[in-house]
Image 1 (tube, one colour):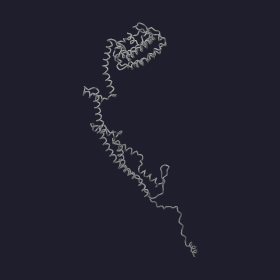
Image 2 (spheres, helix red, strand yellow):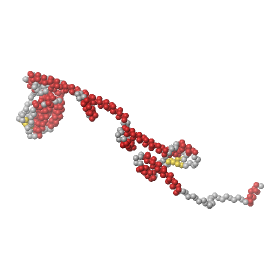
Image 3 (cartoon, one colour):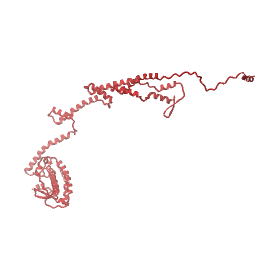
Image 4 (cartoon, helix red, strand yellow):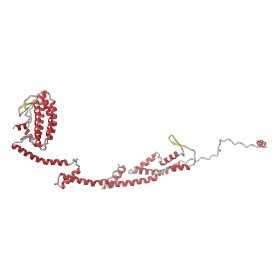
Length: 451
């Protein structure tokens, strides 16, 4: 009998009606703050299957004790807050025995209640630390005991309550619980039956660990899984997933080479390429995209060839530097003229001048277009708006060439230089008149000298 009492009250029974000092209350608040950590350490010492063992005959299991602590201390926190905010409120008791027999109290994971107690006690201790001496003297009325319980006494009660149940868990961990009579045999049978029930749970845990962590499935994956499930409805989920995975891999392997062959990496398309593709698509709407692109490509290549052929005939042949130098040597020597670019004077006929002539021959300098050229280009563009710019320029050039000879003939007829009339007047010269030959009288002295 003494052993049973020691198991039921391992730290002794609580004494109601005592007076507590402020120092006692602080010590009790500290016990409340330390309870979650003490309980966590006690539960860690339990061996496998010990959570469903009782600390005494016909008593709660260690699992039920942990869940009961969470239930009881939630009610205690609310009772104390009611007492601090109202004038002696009447609390509502709860059936703790029935709560412990419910599914969450009997078979729930103890981790949930330990986490709940950790958060609850942090708030509870914060609330208790903010109470004044007057608040500690307030209380609530308990209808079961038919007495008013002060907040000071309630703090002491629940500090004892936490240590009381932690001692029960330690008894189970140390294996000090005793069995007596048939009740213990029933408990043993119950424990063995629950162990048998737990065995398949361990298998489930192994299966979960073996499964790799998967990301969110796509629509294709869901469709493949449904197809595999419809083909073999008696298979397990793991086998269905394996089949669906294999089907997706084969489909992906067959699809990837086709994609790489049919769709080469292309650069950004120009406006002409888009227009050619649209034209090919309009001409044959039932063709595939690859065939439309092939047709558009062929049309663009033929258009480029057509553009390049007239352009080559119109282009002037380039003169090389050697040809320019030879031409300058053949020409007659003249006085050296000073030519240059900007402030740098260059003598005509020198190497610098020859290279300058060669550069100017390589790159023909284009003058600014006249109003007639712009008008001809606009007219060609309006006549054929779908042509490219190169074709429009070629047409405008041809139109200007055909119009140029007619204009030059008209200008030649209108602007002939007037014929200068022949003048009969004698040309006056600025030279001095030639001296007249001396007469016979003037020659006499010369003959005399000779004699």
